[in-house]
Amino acid sequence: MTDSTQLPIDRTSHDTLATTGLDYRLLDVTDADAARAWLLAETRGFHDGARSDALIEAQTRDMAGDRVIGVWDSSALDAGSPLATVRSWIMDLTVPGGAALPAWAISDVTVAPTYRRRGVARALLTAELRTARDAGISMAMLTVSEATIYSRYGFGPAAWQAHYAIDTRRAHWRGPTPAGRLQLVAPASLLGEAPAVFARARRVSPGEVDRRTDLWQRIVGVYPAKPQDDKRDDLYAVRYDDETGTLQGFAVYRFVHENAAFPNRLEVTDLVAATDDAYAALWRILVEMDLTDDITAPMRAVNEPLSWMVADRRAVQKTDERDHLWLRILDVPATLERRTYASPGEFVLTVEDDLGFIDGEYLLTVDADGRGTAHPLAESDTDPSSAAARLTLTAADLASLYLGGASAVDLAGSARLTEQTTDAAARLDATFRSAHPPRLSTWF
Ligand SMILES: CC(C)(COP(=O)(O)OP(=O)(O)OC[C@H]1O[C@@H](n2cnc3c(N)ncnc32)[C@H](O)[C@@H]1OP(=O)(O)O)[C@@H](O)C(=O)NCCC(=O)NCCS
Image (cartoon, rainbow, N blue to C red; front, side):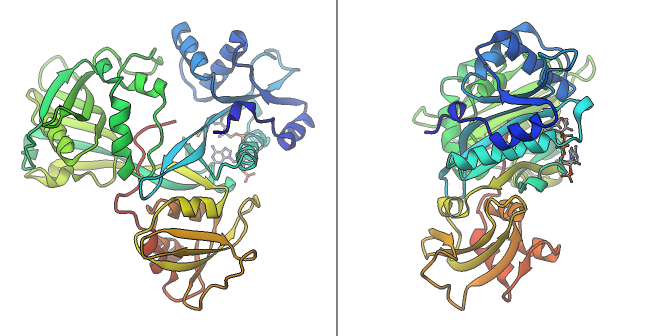
């Protein structure tokens, strides 16, 4: 496994920024003062409130295994404070078929308002991509604050998230009543077993990524809070064990008291189910919770089966749906061969990449078992058959199609993707389709 903290700094971006007097380098995360300054700069970048010492200490500890980069200006009044930040690490992304693809996760991209629009973010992002590619990582990924920033670097939206509002007075449970056991537990008691349940649950959810230890601690409310976080000590949790006593799922939730009286609103902050029974049992107890009028459930899948489990499906309203995980392919054959496919096919993909990472023609052949083999066409001895579907598309659009969540037909209809052969986009959709729409239930 590559240790990204040991990789050299990208010389191209270092030299580009040096020409404007800026110093691009790795942060020494063992230097507590420097780490604090870096974290405060990142805080400022997202307009967050002041962080407690406890939070800074925890974050400094948790950055130890990450590649933490800053840009400094020695002529600034506060020269010890970086004007730009970025942090990255390698973690697994679930792809269709359930395999894990090690991907370069990029986070904490900020540039101080006083240095914006001078190309600093471009230097940071392109350096991350070059470093990942040179380390043999085939995919980069991030979650985004705005949808307008990253397609210029070849990222495309590839997994979605939806927010739901459920009117529990109207819903009326009509779903199954599983035979396992529900128990209310302290959220922190889930810390030990929850990661293993999530590891099983995520196999059917392309787009899910590893949940780091610090994220689990946040989910169960034992991580120091950010100033803008809701209260952390009001979390509840319920676990579902199957008939053999094995934990198969859990929900973490809180009650929101909008006025002093009942009823309350219930907010589901996390719900992980490794089996259909666990899913039904957990939603049933939440939907039937006494003294509760409605439920809000952010960061859920776009196709929650819940609406099929209640008498009045209009009681389950999707209040928001948006792109969440953005992917950037750095190695086309490696990524295409990692996932499995819904149906056989042969494709010639002509990829246009402004940054030059994956420009070129590729042949993808998917066999009857849904296994793909791919290689650059120029290096191939095997000519594609005349039956191959041929398409021209950008690196960003290939990334959007990769997890099976975007439609090539839609992209062709939007004049983003060009079909060189009849019905090439529909054929690609039939092969790339994922039984479970890609989703990502967390931020990173
Ligand atoms: C987004 C941010 C990092 C951009 O930094 P920057 O140094 O100003 O960006 P650059 O000067 O390198 O701009 C590169 C390109 O991105 C564009 N761009 C930058 N920020 C943008 C934004 N918020 N929306 C749309 N386009 C943006 C620039 O116009 C430029 O376009 P070009 O390639 O066509 O010339 C910075 O504005 C910031 O810190 N924002 C707040 C924190 C944030 O949202 N971070 C992103 C987290 S996912």
